[in-house]
Image 1: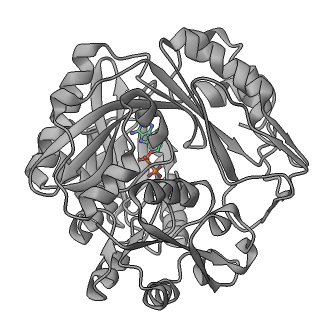
Image 2: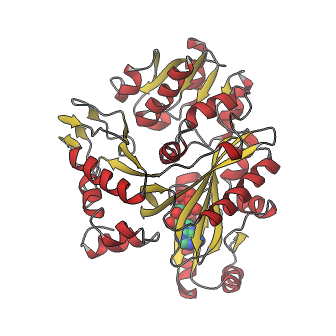
Image 3: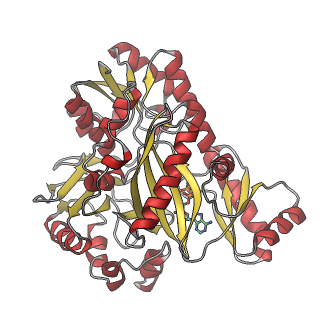
Length: 450
Ligand code: ADP
């Protein structure tokens, strides 16, 4: 096991990783920007190092400063959390060059899955069903039109280096293809420094269903069931649940086993999530995330496993702690992302939290670094916490969620809590009857900014 883990992240996920380290008896090092000096992840770590100015490129993305922080503190491993450097293959390599363990998959697998075109090719070759689509689309418009014709409209233009829904543009008809290609390329170039785009069949009413995997890098892999993340705004997940209200047990086993088998063949290491769109009873691979995800908590609630502890153990060279037949799925879990945003306009609402009272009681978990008196800096994403609720059935889970949301007090800033309180009264939500467009359509009906 490691002696000391440096957590190259901030906010709730840095705290989440610290908790796992403490339960493993491993010392922790927090890093922080000058804007985060009194953040909870800094207060609760054994040691902390300031790594730079507030903009992420100067601190949480500042590789030399993070490597220096490891050397100063003697950390022998780095947990990257999600976002920031978590899917940066070069970062993984640099750490290895300094004899520091990157808690994650091999740099080769991070790179492979980071390119969505290569990821789709790999998935297909491993027997995973993929969305019909193309390879990189060149500058010739007539050629692009022919490719789109081959797939059939509507088509989605997507960035090969994509993430966070950026560089993604819809073309309903042929006359929309040229502007969609141009906008997607520009967005991709600006966001990722790589304007490569490809085309994909646009699925009209799919659900977003993703499979969690755990693998040891030696050819052993298990799946931990699926999560349904269909409730999204601008391709950002807001509400996730496990299991999916749309799958039956045999579909669950079928897709889970397909993914686990692919990870065995790949000799994948660590935690990973294979994301699908699900429509008409079929699964279509869209991408793989080679890191811990925000919504990993709901899988923890229904399996009783601590995914971060498993992740750290695997990185330290331990074999998987359980076999597929040891995995038990128990009850239902829902996560709501509490963002510091206006619940109608979704405008970020940084500022000082005056009162903070998280809900409690049986089956209620709050992962958050927020506290009364904490000032949310304006530099980072707006997630200030996650409310996770677990119960025996989906109905009990919804009732518990309603109760917990009613208890949650966050004063001084605006949050998405009122949005979730209103969603829980919607018949479609109660029935689990929603696809990836449901939330935006619903917000448009309410006259809010979808
Ligand atoms: P990113 O990495 O930018 O988040 P993803 O490929 O994971 O992009 O897609 C994000 C979301 O965009 C999906 O959850 C889904 O809502 C929507 N989406 C992606 N591909 C398609 C598609 N082919 N058809 C319809 N919707 C899609």
